[in-house]
Length: 303
Image (cartoon, rainbow, N blue to C red; front, side, top):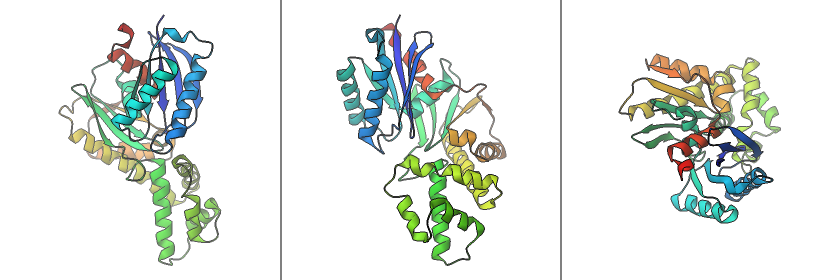
């Protein structure tokens, strides 16, 4: 029996599995964040930990390949060095791709359907494939944008809060909640809660803003609605670059897009307002399964 290892390295956690050649899950492990743009050394450490735990007690000589989908900007030289490092360390061929690639193939599977991926998680990106080439819109990272993500929502909320304070506007109930949320009594001290921490820590405050939205704070509700609209903007940019816009299958990935209040609804409303014809994928498959389908596409099991 031949196997592959698939690894989905995300902004907050890493999920890794062994698959057989039928796509059956043999073993699964988890580790911490895997965003090389945020923390390169920790990301590599978490990848290594996943692989070690997967092959422990397993006949790893039957593992044909490792496919790793990484969050963050991937330079060609860096990806090659990681691939060589993994191969040297474990004796298994390895391929580094973007996390968006495996997410896209978790939707496409082994079909030729016209598929668009929309990710709204800690970060954001839209991806599609034409003539065998995967293309992207957005996904530039938190320093440039990441509109339509939990990180972007929190930073936008803080910017708006600081702007109101700089203008000495009357303190609203929502502002008082922000003071309480970040545990500060002077508004400029909120900066200390943001700088010097990982991206996923900042993004985690989106859960608290969600609670405020559920509690009826219109300001919080608007923040989530706007992130859905931002994702729709990325989607519209993507399909403007597509030669074939017919029979679109749209897959939604990321806990922020799928679980945060108002985001998914806002995204879909925007698409409908523009008259976009599409179908949402019938049944969502975890992004890491895209590693298996990429292995099929690249004929890994035939080597």
